[in-house]
Image (cartoon, rainbow over all chains, first blue to last red; front, top):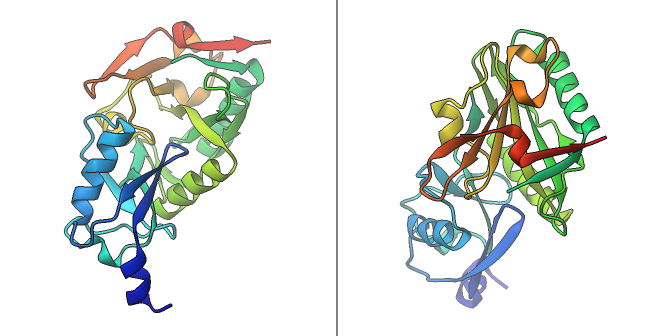
Length: 84
Length: 147
C-alpha cells in the first residue's frame, strides 16, 4: 500500500496521554492544533497551553501543519518537561 | 488523589537526589504504579535529564518514549517528585511544565538537596486543581507511606 493509499484509508488517530489511548476521527484537512485541542479536552487536561502532539519517535508536530502527514498514533505531552 | 506507597520509595527517592544532584543540582523522579490500582505507587523512575542548581529538563524524545513504555507496561505516573537547593515550594516553572496536567495530579518538592533528616512534613506538596491552578496541600493528606 502506498503512503497515499494509506492516508485514504486512515479513519482514526490514536492519541496517548497518561497511559490512556483515545481514538479521534481522522479529518484530512484538520490542522494539528485542532486535534491538539480536541485531545486536551477529551483527556481533561486543564489550563495548559504548553502541550503538543508528538510522533512515537519523539518528533514534535508543528501546530499549524495538516494532520495528513501525521501517523495514526500520536502522543500528547508537554512541549518541555522541566521544573525548577 | 491519594498515593499509597511503601516508606522505601521515599528513601530511594532521597538517595537518587543525593547521588544524582550531588548537593549541587536539581533532580526529578516519578513514582509510578499499575493502572489497575489508581492509588498505588510501587516503583520509581529516574528519567535521564539535564540539571542546574535551579532547574531540571527532561529530553523530550525520552519523555515520549517513557509515555509509550508506561502505557505498554500498563503503568502510570502517580507522583512527580523533585528536589530544591533550599526551601521547598512549587515554582512557576513547576506549575507550567509538569509531566501530567490533569486535575488531582500531585507534585512533591523536597528541600535542601535532600540532605539532613527529610520527612514528608518538611516537603511541599502541590495538587493540580480543576481550574489549572496548583494548591498546596499537607503531604500527609495525600501521601500514605506504609512501613
